[in-house]
Image (cartoon, rainbow, N blue to C red):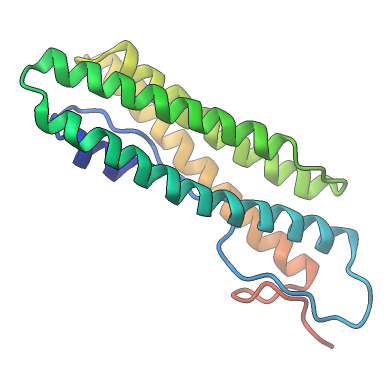
Length: 186
């Protein structure tokens, strides 16, 4: 969510940055089959719609955070002030990612493969939170904190890729077209 934002807004030259990931899907959703959607299709649509809503909400939240912290960074004169702003910023990111985890965990899904996909996405949020916590605990990066942070970023990227691939696989299985997310007509 906020990798570039962390670097741009804080501009502290810190070796850490808040991790990023996308919500599970960005596409329009329509079912056009004459038959009733399958459980897999219903659950995928539920997850995709929740992801779209969360993405829209995230864009608004990101703009709010940017607006809030840009003036603070501009006014910060010392490294200690910049570190304090970075900590406030990351705490806000952690709070928002925790909120996202709760929202996604609350989605009622009955199809196990879709539930697993949602759970993988929640893991990406947990990994992002862990990375931000490393930065908070180590405002001045150490070789060890850099290594731990890099490991969390790699984990988050791998989980995000797994979610993206899993979503694509489930979409194909459900008969959704790749770009439009609607069942294929026979």
